[in-house]
Each structure stands twice: as C-alpha cells, then as structure tokens.
Amino acid sequence: MKTLKLKVSEYDIKVGKILRVKQLTDMEKLFEIVLPEEENLNHLPGQFVVISMLGVGEAPFSISSSPTKLGSFELVIRNVGKLTQVLHDLKKGDEVGVRGPFGNGFPIHILEGSDLLFIAGGIGIVPLRSVINYTIDNRREFGKVTILLGCSSPKNMLFSGDFNRWSKQTDLSFECTVDRGDPDWKGNVGLITSLIPGIDLVPERTFALVVGPSVMYKYVITELLKKEIPDRQILVSLERHMKCGLGKCGHCQINHFYCCKDGPIFSYDQIKDIKESI
Amino acid sequence: MERYVVLEKKYFNDFISEIAKKQKVVAPVAKGYHQYAFEEVTSGDQISLNYIPTILPPKKYFMPQNEIIATYDVSKGQNMKRVVEYEEMVLFGVHTCDLAGIQCLNIAFSENPKDINYNIRKNKIIIIGYECNNYCDEYASCGLMQNHLPKGGYDLFFTNLENGKFIIHMHTLVGEKLIKKSAFIKKASEADMQSLNDLRERKRKIFEKNEVPIEYEKIPELFDKVYDSKIWDELGKKCLACGNCTNVCPTCYCFDIIDESNLDLKTGYRYRKWDSCQNEDFAKVAGGENFRPERAARQRHRYFRKFRYPIDRFSRFFCTGCGRCSRACMANINLKETLTQLVKEQGMENPNAGYRG
Image (cartoon, rainbow over all chains, first blue to last red; front, side, top):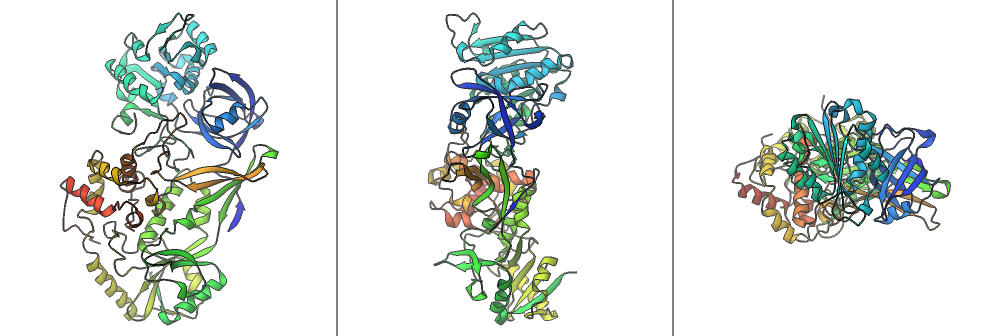
C-alpha cells in the first residue's frame, strides 16, 4: 500500500479559532468562530458545517449567524455526547476544524418579495436565527415578517438578546410561548401550534419557515394548511445523522433524499409523500 | 474496431507468472468448501477459475474496509495532512456481476462532489474480466439484472472457450499494453471468434428466463407499489441486523468516519470504515432519536437502495444479481425469494419474463 499526499480533498478542514464562548443555558453554549484571515464562511442561512476535533471526531452543526455578519460565524452547541463535551471545554483562542458549509440552505432569493412566517420550536431557533437575522438585515426585500417562537420553559430560551431586539422592532411581529411558565414569566403559555390560528396572513404570498423537533412538524404543518398556505411555500429543516456532508456515506438518507445534500431544507410538497420524512 | 487475441490454456500459469513478476496480481483463490476470496497470486495455478462469487467483492480494493484519509498531530494544532492510500495492481478474474458492481461504485463516487480518494485508487487498478459460461449457483440473479454478459468496465476480458484457448477482448490501451509483448498471446482466428459466438449463443439459452418472474424494466414500477408491503415485516422478523448483506454487497458503499489516536495521544489518523444501514444506530442522531429503528424498515431501505432510489439518481439498478447477500445471510433472507414474493403480491407475475438482448 502506498500513501500519497493530497493537495485537495473533500475531507479537508479549515482551522477555525474560537473568538467567543457564551453559556446560553445549562446545556447550550454559543461559539463564535473565525476562519484564517477572517475569510467569510460564505454560507446560506439554513446550511450547516461539520466541526472536527482531531482525535475525537466530527459532527454537523447548524450555522446560527446570518451571512450578513462578516468575518466570523456562530454555532450553538448542545452538550450531548463525546465531541460536544470536548467542544464545551474549549476556551477563547482554542482551535477547531471546520468543514463546509454543506446543504442547500433556505432559498433566500425565492423568498424575496414574500411575507415570511418564521416558526421555531426549541432548539430549532438555532438555524432559524440565521435566516431571521438575514431577513432583518435585508428588511426592505421582504414583505410582512412574523416570528413565532416556542420553548419548553423560560430558562431554556437561547437568544434572549435577539428576542428582546426582535420584540422591540416595529417592522416585524414577534410572539413567544412556553410549554411551562415560571413565576417571572409574563408571556404566553401553551404549545407553538396555539399561536398559529391568531396570525393574520395572506396565504398566497406567505412562506412559512419552520424548524423544530421532528414531532412538531406534523402539528405545525396541519395548522399552516388550515391557513391555506400552499404546500410549496411551507419550508422545513429536517434533522438527520449527517456524517460526510457530501451525499455519500448514507447515514442521513430520507428515502431517496440525502438530507445533507438535497436538504436539510425541504418544501412540504417535496416531502409530503416521502414516508420517512416527518 | 473490436480487438481479440487468444491465449492457449496450457500457457495460463506462465502467463500469470509473467505479469506477477512485474506487478501485484490479485485473483480468486479457493478458501475451503464453496468459499473463494480475491487474494494476491504469483502463478496461474493458485487461481480458481471455476469460482462462485467471492466472500467479499472486489469492492475491497476500490473502497477498502478501513481507509486512512488524513493524518494529524494535535501538538501542532487542528491541522491534518490529507492522504490517499492506493496500490497498483492487476485484478484478474472479475465476473460480469462484479464488473457491474465496480461501475456502480464508480458512478456513486464520481457524482458531485467527486470523491478524490476513490478516483485516484480506481485508476491504479487494471481490471481483467472473466466470463461465466454457466450459472454459479441458485442464488445468482444476473440474468434478471442483465449482468450475465460483458458490458464494459474492464481493460481485458477473458472467455474460456471449449477449444483449449481463452479468447481475450482488449478493451483499453492499458489492457493491450499489459499483454502485447507476451509471447503467449496470439491473434484470434475466425474459428476462435466463431467459438465465442457459439458459446454466447449457448449462454443465451441458459440465461433465457429471468430468475424472478418479472421483466427487468418493470422492477421500478414494482417497487413503487410495495413500500407498505407486509413482506418487509416478515424480513424484519427474520433479520439479525448483523450487516452481512451490506458488507458483501458489491455496490453498498455507506461508511463512517472515525479518528484513531496513537498511544502518544497526539498523533493519529482519520479513516473511513465500511458501515451498514442494517446496524441499529445507523440513522440515530445525537439527541437520541432514531429515524429507522425497526429492522423491517432497514431491510426495506436496503432493497429500495438497490432497486428504486438509484434509478432516479443514477439511471441504473444497484443490484448486480451476484447473490452474495442471500449466500451470506445467517437468517436465510433470500433476495430472489423476496423479489418473487413482492411480484406475486402485486400480481405482476410474468413466468416468461426473460432477457431479450
């Protein structure tokens, strides 16, 4: 067996340096990462990167910052396994390997000119924040913007800074609900689906962008269909076990789709007959 | 113009030795009762010409079970050196089913984004095909999958004639160069060509009827109807989720990427390793959710990845008809039986379905 060095490889990593780590909740930390020479990641909202720690392994993470934020990008990482534990132990100045961005991302130019209804459940706000902040930074390109956010409890809220800003912004409407309140909570209590019937929208010019845990999709989509939003204007981001990010290794397949390459963003008309999808 | 030469069988051992002196030759070797494996050989008498599909397909040379893709030294930061492992070799004796398997892998790894490691390695291997004059055993369905006759994918192709000679189709310049200077190689005569035609005519009769009562072109239509079939539940009850079927499949290419540290805990390597959609945690995500928890769904996924999904993506089936999955299954899940059951369930049976090449 001979070994040859490769100049290029799909598995190559860029060295990302951690600029900032912020503890968001007990389980989640936000990492701001900068690539060599502050190269832009050049991603689309809704895409993901594969983060690697040599000797530990690789895993995919949604990009949480908007591409309008230049020079660095943000990830929110929940501590659930071996790699994420190692990542949670990292400090400012430490290095990680970065591969990507991968996936199709939200079709932002198709969305231009339309009204946008963002629906995030739990950790689904992590990728959705990327496209929400993109929309805010390009606000005049879009119609009416509505953000609905559902969360298990107030202490699990991920981006209180962003939420404060969004709720004060007059050019969008922001509503939030929690499954269980606490004594200080003054907002809505109930499931995310309870917020949808009250929304005033024009279905033919509205795109709904929905990201949340897999159990949420069926119920949210049912509510959106009641509002007569066309199937192809309901966009979801599906979670699967992405490994290679290149449409090869097979782990993320949803019937014939490769979630890492054909997705993770799918319109409801693409997946409504795909039995493994939601 | 098609170019044919012949090699007298009495010179076969010397012919192989001649090549093996210059480079590595791998070929099918007997490994005990009804088991064969591709292994390095130095002479023709080590080769089992009359072999049934090897335990592992030649996939193991194109996509090794463990393949280092990078090396690292973390004391120098999160930098890695990208590498490709390869070996120059002559792969002798590849049946038409396995040639089709290699073609499937070529397509999957050439699709954008192209896999550089695979493509470098494949170009270092000279492929010599070898024709089956008859069925290998009852597990094969190469007739149904139309892989019983050569359809390219080789540099040279050997057919064992009944006149004491091998006739060799020289398909590429690389193949021609390999044997051109050999003293054992002679021009093919009219009689040799006739002998090849006669053999193919006899083969036509042997492989006339499909092994499963359905037309080749109706298979995708069959699979469009059977997603919710109870037959998958039956397979799920039998399946042991061991992954034998996917490991021995010439077209299964799913993999995992794993880091292995050396004992100094600083240096190490990142490698690709065969993985199987039949393993329970294959589709499990970090949060614990498993998107294909039942064995029935995993078996169905395997069949759909052979007979339905690649039709849309690559315009071809990813089953070659080699029969390895059925031979290797410890629970006796049999591909031909499963297909026959699905065909009958849908009332699509055509007992006369056959190859019309």
